[in-house]
Amino acid sequence: MRRVVTPWIIALGGLLLGLGVGAALFLGFFPSTPRDDVAEAEDTSLIHAASASSALPLIAPVEGAQAPDFTLRNLAGESVRLGDLRGRVVLVNFWATWCEPCRLEMPMFEEAYERYGSPSLEVVAVDFDEPLEDVKAFLDELGLSFHILLDPDGKVERLYRVIGIPTSFFVDPEGTIRVEHVGPLDEELLDRYLERAGLPVQ
Image (cartoon, rainbow, N blue to C red):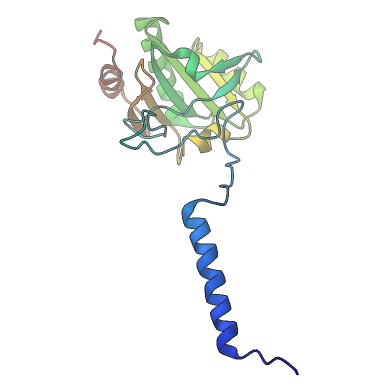
C-alpha cells in the first residue's frame, strides 16, 4: 500500500527541525567563526565580554578597556609588541604621510617624547599601507625618534576600528585605554590626555 505524506506532517517536521537548529545555535553547540583581522601572532579572542563571574578584563579599542595587543615591524624590520611596553604610558597614533594634520602633530609627539623620556612615555605611530621609502623620507624630514611601525595589510587599523586619521589612543601603564581621540591634537589636549593616562604635568 502506498504511504501518503500529508502537508501537515511535512510542516510539523520542518518546524521541529527549525526548533532543533535554533536551540543548538542558542546553546552554543556550533563553534563560532574565527576572526581574520587579528594582528600578527596574537590571541584570536582579543575582544571579549567581561562578566561579573570572570576575572578577565574587557579587551577592546574603547576607553576603559584593555588595549588590544599587537605586534608590528619598525622601519629596520624589528618586531615591536605593544604588550612589551607595559609600565609606561603609551600613545598609539594612526597616521599617514599624506595626512597634513598628522604632519603637524608629529613634532608635538617628538617634543613630548623627549620631555618625558622613554622610561615614562612611549609613542607608537602606526602607518597604514604606505611604501617603506615614503615613510623613511617622512621620518628623516621631521627627525622623529619614537616608534614608527608599518601596518601593510591594515590589520591593526581594523583591530582598533580606525575610521579616520589621525586617531590617537592614550594607554596607561597597566594597558588600559584612558582616552580615544579622533582628529588632530593640539598641545593643550596632548598634555591633558597624557596626564589622564598617568603622566605628571611638566
